[in-house]
Image (cartoon, rainbow, N blue to C red; front, side, top):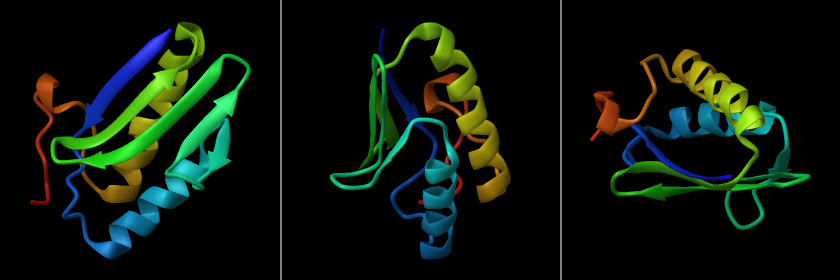
Length: 98
């Protein structure tokens, strides 16, 4: 299944927060590294992340049954690491840094 979401993480995030975010990315299942940007791969899994003006974008393919747990885990870990609630701006989650 195709997924394409944006998170309320602005590109103006302080450097120390980017480091924390990188640690969270690397701790997630299916982590494939940061060769051409953060990527997660596996059987029927090919996700990537990029920094966009509207927030961090994560897109690609992942089976829905894996996605639900993976995405919840990512948001929880990022919330703990960055110190504010992470979610999709269209769902009312606000940016902390601009």
